[in-house]
Length: 305
Image (cartoon, rainbow, N blue to C red; front, side, top):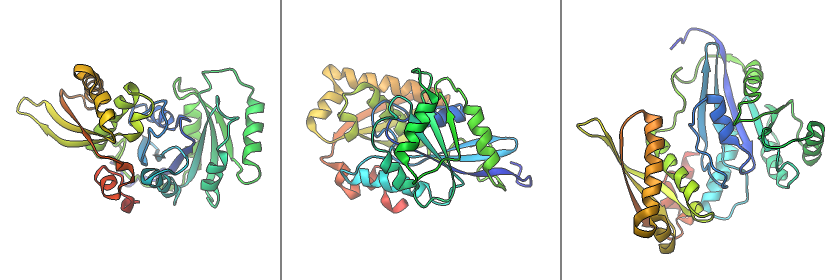
């Protein structure tokens, strides 16, 4: 790592409503699937750092949970995570879905952005999916934000097609201060491997289970060890809130839990480039999203914020 060379480096917070495509945008920037994605709300539950490196810059992106109302202690944790993400940042990215830009909820973003002195960039995402009038989109969004928030730049992007992603990166680099790297050049994130693996398993639950059940699911890695044959053995626990949910997760004759396990193993092997032996167990913990101790045990410790 070249520590004696001055580069452009800084922190960028990625903000937006649920399902705006924040994690997909981060994955497009990093050219890797470091952040889990799905079409269901609350896919991202905690701040995740994604580290962009090139020869003359290091940009630390902070992917945040979707901004939404608070119904339980887990929601409160996510809300506080968002507020924490904008402390001492160099730039804020606000991502909006071009298909839902006329809907409500922008007042929640305004509350987060108020008082932030850093520059603010508007990213209109998913522009490959529909035809749109660029001027109408910008005027409508500016009208919803009113005089409370002024954006320094606007970009229309497609994270899926990586349209205009390079242009966004180039602009961000131009706005970063000079300094040293915060992390090694090879690092994509500072997230522990166990947490990344747990999120990959939860992503499969989001993909394969009914709409409401994934909101009440947590995944814990009980153990992760290399065997003598160099296979990575992973024992994971899927936590749900109801016995009826447990039955759905396991499925008839274990069909659903097997399906989740196969998808998880493929994703983890692709990420780690290792052979994986994955064992999944399902337990019930009633109302865990409102239990402070259980939240901390499952990785959502408010004291860390």
